[in-house]
Amino acid sequence: MDLKEYYREVAKIETSIKTPFAVVVSLATGNGGREGVVSEVARTVAARMVADKQVRLADAKEVKAFHRDREVELKRRDDAVSRERIRAALAVEDELTLLKEALQLQPKGR
Image 1 (cartoon, rainbow, N blue to C red):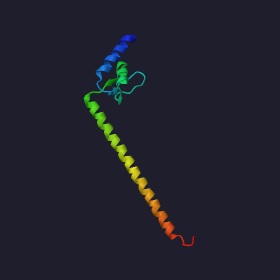
Image 2: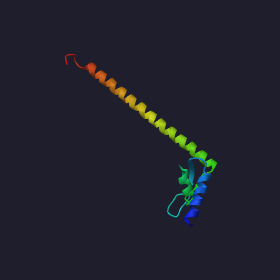
Image 3: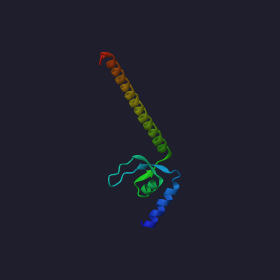
Image 4: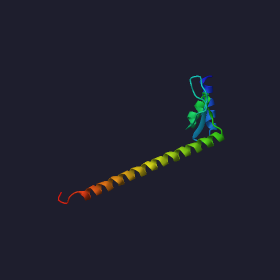
C-alpha cells in the first residue's frame, strides 16, 4: 500500500470515530499480539491501529461493558484508599491514647 492511500484510510477511519477516545479490541498479530484485549485510546491512535490491522473498533455492547468494568474498578480502588485512610487515622488515635497514658503514669517531679 502506498503512503498516500494509507493516510487516506487513516483519515477516513479517524473521521468515522465521533468521540475523542475510542474503545478498541486487539487482534491476534504475527508478532505476538494477543486477541481480545480491550483498551481506550485517542481517536488518532485508534485510527492508525485499525488501519494497521492491530485492533478493531469495539461494538456498542463491548464499549458499555468496558466503561462499566472501569467504573467498578475505580470504585474498588477508591474504597481501598478510604479504608487505608481510616486505618491510618485509627492507628494515630491509638498512638495518641498510649502517649497520654504514658504521660499520666510519669511521676510529678520529672
